[in-house]
Image 1 (tube, rainbow, N blue to C red):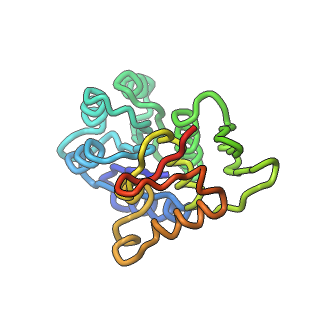
Image 2 (image 1 turned 45 degrees about the horizontal axis):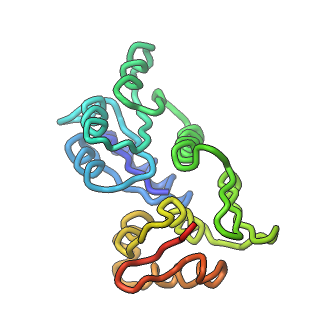
Length: 218
């Protein structure tokens, strides 16, 4: 899962970044409203964590601008404002969830994962792709009741392809969504992960189209 955290408190920002990276999230950060709005407008994220009080542009203004651009990425707002009227204002402007400071990391992670499940696969926790079944709540992939052992990154890549099924997914799209620039700069990690995933599942499930990318047809 790829997160954008927009927070001007450096201590909170880096604690969240380190914590989510330890949980195998891809995390990008911004410590000002201007930088956060630019990143949120230019890149794709699974969930945005947005502080209410920011320099340059407030969280509410960012929220309003993103929704006016028809960017519907799930957004959870963080704020010291605990009044009901402030929560209502955030929700009315398009926030999907709200968490008051101070908060626990575990609660924030649970809320983010719930938002991701709710928006990615609304109808069911189970996805059927050809002869494979994906339990998104348990992060388990099975083939004819046999569990396929996938690494965390292989599972994330599979889910990204599933979210974009019947469409070509380029190496650049995968890189942007699942890896940081530092991870891919001097390696062929994307090709290796695709190779392992196709070997564990099947080449017929994940098709390679030269010059276009990869695609799951369903």
